[in-house]
Image (spheres, rainbow, N blue to C red):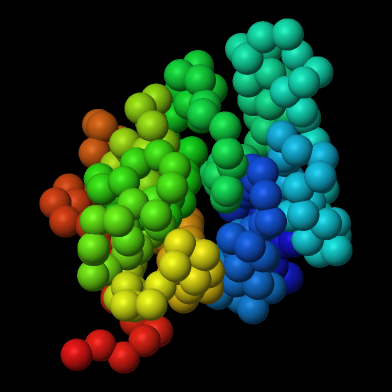
Length: 228
């Protein structure tokens, strides 16, 4: 989906999904509204039944499904996935609800241009079941983080974070839904905008923002409920 009238081709994204595609939808909308100067070259999934693939098709995007069950070894699957992504010549590889742990070889192949969104205020709550863990621990705020991907799970340098207040009557389901609608779908396009504009760069193992080492990750509060 290139932006018409641009002097230079818009940066190319490959979006990798496993599920409903709600962050994919947010990125599509940001591009269509002109808020994000990018084009989605490919949407790729490890699940043929991922609802997000229908979102991609309805938007007229190129879609590919590569399922792990077709490969004897994880490394073979990762190589096939990586080859298809590389063939799209992406400027950025955007993990948007991709629910498989990536091999070190895959991560290294796209080092510096592989990004992910995680539903917690990293470094807290790496891995799964973040909403349940927030509620179990009595946290008053919950959020999401966009980060560069490194071989260690949910451990890459942060690009942006944002949060909302946790309501007294929240369940894991209501908290997850509010976090997606009020935080993730706003945060991911904004973070991609930082990368595409060159405001944020990743080299020498650290994140640079506006030409300076980023010592503190930007953190926005996206409250959707009244707080005292």
